[in-house]
Every structure is written in C-alpha cells, then in structure tokens.
Length: 250
Figure 1: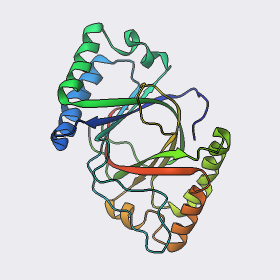
Figure 2 (figure 1 turned 180 degrees about the vertical axis):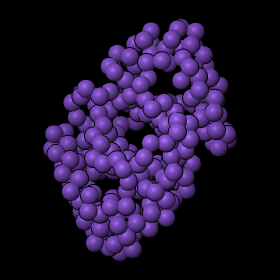
Figure 3 (figure 1 turned 90 degrees about the horizontal axis):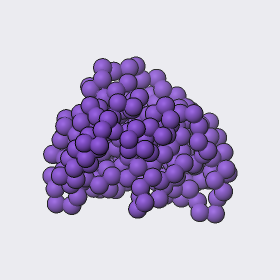
Figure 4 (figure 1 turned 60 degrees about the horizontal axis):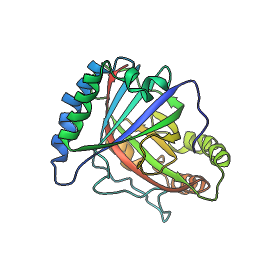
C-alpha cells in the first residue's frame, strides 16, 4: 500500500491521549488550543486538517460476510492530523517546520502537558474522488469521515499491494457509492521511531452517520461480498477511526 515519494507531501499524525485522562477534554483542547499554536508557529504548513476521533459508529453488514475491518472500542487514537507541505524538508527540519526554537518548545511542551503521544507518517495521497464542497476554515465539515488504518499481507510485495489497491477503485466506485470522498494514503515511511506499523490509510467520507452505518457498501449484501473479497487480496488487517473533520488551513 505504500508508494514512492510524489510531488505532494502529506504527513499524517496519529495522536493518543494517555490512559486515565479525559479523552473528550483532550480532543477539545487539541482543536481549540493546541491546533491554534500549530497554525501560529508553523507557517510552512500549506493545508492543515484536524480529525477528532469522536464519532460512535457501527458499520452494518446484513449478510454472512465478515467486514474487511475490525472495529475497536475504545479507539486507539483520539486525534488525527493531516499536514501538506511544498517539500518534505519543511517538516523534517525543525528550523523550517517551526518559526523559532521557542515555538518548537512551546508546541512540544503543550502536547506533553496535555498527555498526548504522537506518531508521524510521511504519506502519498491519491484522491480517487472528492465531491465535498469547500467549508469555511475552522468549521466542522458536515458528515462523518472514516479513516481505515491498514496493513498489507506480509507475503505481498509492495508494488503488488499498490496495484491491487489502485484496482480497488473499480469496486469502490460501484459499492461505496454513498461516499462523497475517497482518498488512498500510502505510507512512504514512519517518521517516529516507535510508531505502530501500518501501510495505508483509506479515507471514506459519508454525508451522514446513517449513510456510513447503513450504506457503507451501498446497503446491499452484494456490496458486502464484493468489497470484502476484493480488499482481501491486499489487506491483512484494518480498523477504522470514525472522525469529525475540521479544515483549519485550506
């Protein structure tokens, strides 16, 4: 599912609140305080999206087919951020990413004080379709964004997995027909030394929670069978993070 570096640079960060903390308060502070610090002190970020893992959902499969993912409750992460850059150097070198050393210290200390642990991944996004109209920066994008964190089969070569994932667009176009956005984020590299291993993040956006739960694969048993069968060619493990999306810098 990972692919070679492309011109567009996108860093996805998975962020977890430490055990025993108020997870709802953590998400709220991240959005309304920490993310504001990032916007203020990281001017080279071209686009900045914060996804709060605050949606309770259960994808319904009506037939006997097992879903191609497992749902975790509670989810292992509380926030996902997406950052786009002109060049990867704008992220990997602190003197370029932060406006100053003091800004770097401020942002790192703030996340530590919140009890947050973050894992960064360099990815290459492929937008299969996006029919969502632009929203006002800072407002919640209407709908639900499901982010599927996935690993490929260990015995499957990277290039073979990439090819199968691109071909999955055919089945997705037919059965994920209620999704208004479908993005395939292939992991180029994990940037945090102890980051959990995964190879791709599929974004599927649905206009309503009901659309996600009841019509994830078009609301048909045929869709359940075909999507699960096609995904099984390259997906070894996958779990969703059901999120609310906030585009803070467009």
